[in-house]
Length: 405
Image (cartoon, rainbow, N blue to C red):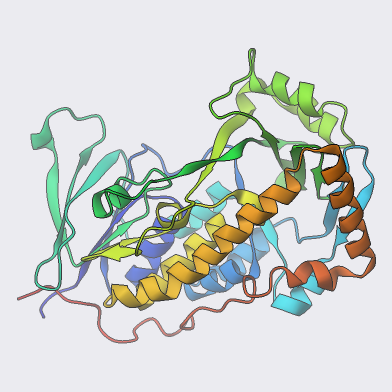
């Protein structure tokens, strides 16, 4: 083998950038290709559980991210009238899992991950296609070029010892590897997200469950607030006027601070997206020299808050098994499939719409709360207590797979 091994990452979201950073730390020459013109996500935040924070420790930025987080997990679950069904306890979570749940803007995490890559390591405005997944005897081939270029001669072909498909739920890489896979399905509900300044408004971090809909509000640094909502609706629906008006109709009479958040929001601040997930896992998370990661492999409903967390886990595990992608599939497919199925089960509970089902659900949540936080935290056993396969200082556990000579 001669020269550095090359990795091409298709997709510059959290998972793709984390994979690029993890591979770079282990000696790979990394190029990240992102279709969008900018890496900056709009109007969203991410909750990072202890499992993801430990993965970020491997990348060397875990403590930095912990310091940037404003919300440390105190809060709880409420009804639309404001009654508390349960209270969360950051100290108990830290004692059980070693870290609390923390929240920060996605843009903050994206910036920190991108900074871990060398100059020129990320190309935005670039569409990429897997031409050949490669095999043990030949590299994979990727064709990439400007996203707005009609002339195919404007695209170049890249060879790589590893290609990472981190291109999201509608992954073209997944389709290229497994053309018979059914792809994502509608989860039955839509979501709204708002990230706005809201200085001077005091409130406790919360998620509120109603009948077939929910709302969450969480403080961020600098007087900002992240709020999200979800409701059971047919796929493809849109408000007849604007989405802020739709939120007012649905949630305007819910408890404080929901009305204050809506009053401070503009129509353009509100993002709406239907929720889809991968109900049938791909047969593997790799083929040839190409590996799938994050939503491209295991998109799940947001009800456990684990989508981005699992993508970061994928990244550090992939870097560990970059020379043996079958081992990567073996390490990740069973775990992420189980977590995705758990997220679907939770969605059925918190999005329940029948009056009797909601009454039973709320009574059960209140009863569990009286028994203490340990019962709630137990649901994250096997998820939040995950640990990476190698430590932060072990960045060169063997040479990366080199170019064939």
